Each structure stands twice: as C-alpha cells, then as structure tokens.
Length: 101
Image 1 (cartoon, rainbow, N blue to C red):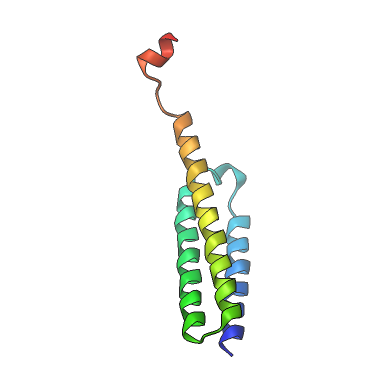
Image 2: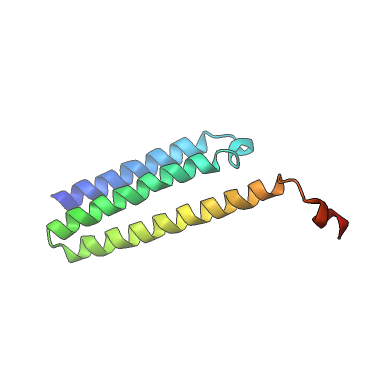
C-alpha cells in the first residue's frame, strides 16, 4: 500500500512541477534558476524520506528506486548551480590585469 502512495506522490509532484514550469515565460527561466534549484533540493529531501521509508519496511526494490531518485535529483541540483554560476560570471567585472592582456 505504501508503494502505491509513494508512486502517487511522485506522479502528482511530476505533473505539478511540469505545469508550474510550463507557465514561466522563457525570458524568466535563467533568473529563476537559483530558485528552482532550491525546489530541486526539496526533491532530494523527498527522495531521502522515501528511502528511509523503504529501509524501514525492508523493501529492497523501493530502496533502489529511492537511491536512484536521490542521485538524479542531486545531479539536477549540481548542474543547476553550475549553470547559475556560469551565468553570474558573465556579469562579473573584469580586473585591470585581465583587461591589459
């Protein structure tokens, strides 16, 4: 029964996330990336909670799915922050030493 609940939560979260992102105009995607990384952090937390629930129930299949979900969410968070960092570096003022080269 808990497996069905976890799958249901995943489906609802996926659909809700898609609908929220779909309504954001493309011009705002880059400035909102840091905020979306925070929401991705919530996904990591959800995957860890699902993993703890699977571990408590001694369900190997759910535990594997939870570990994969946590890993993919962390890849998403890391990639998002690296892209945000690169974007912010574009607006950084150059030092005088770099300008002389």
